[in-house]
Image (cartoon, rainbow, N blue to C red; front, side, top):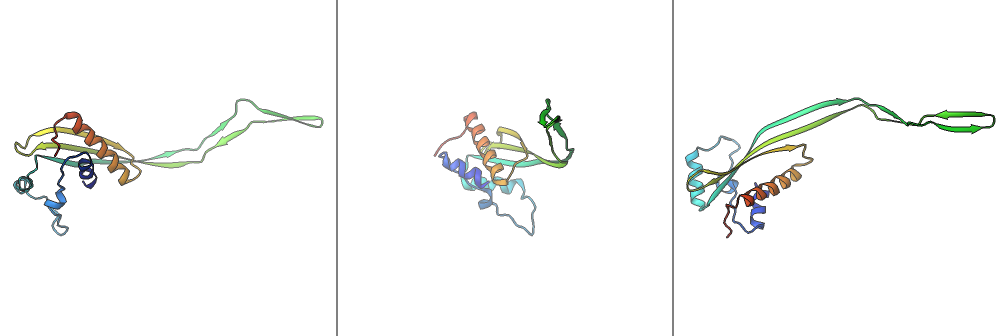
Amino acid sequence: ETALAAAAVAKGYEAVKSIDVLPVDIKNPKMPPKDDIVNKVKETGSDAVLVAALLKKEEAVAFEPGHTTYSILPYYTYYGACYTNWYPAVSTSDYYSHEKTYFMQSNFYDAASEEIMVAVQSKIFDPSSLRLFSKTYTFNMIKQLEKANIKKKK
């Protein structure tokens, strides 16, 4: 949310973060009723609302067996009265791979009519960090909103 707001502001748009309008209560983490959310949005004077949600997270662990690769041609060496030959090889050891896939849904609503103007589903493969994921997601989301040509600048 912070990254999305910062990216919107950097592009010349106004942004209000939900955490500033609807603070989270750790002791009571329930979602507020829709009417409360709509009223808070109207109080901010926002034209539109972007709602992003994690739909699903998949994790896969796979065993990758090691293998040995040989050169196609042997090397020959001459020592005195005899020849030797050998085949160079490269080996890898067994390992486990751990892959994560995230499925996101983002909806961009008109605040007045409460209708969806843009809906985007994203599939994110194995982000190396939350910061990188956030940066990539933000860049792509802003790009999609600009492509839809529905935003007003300040």
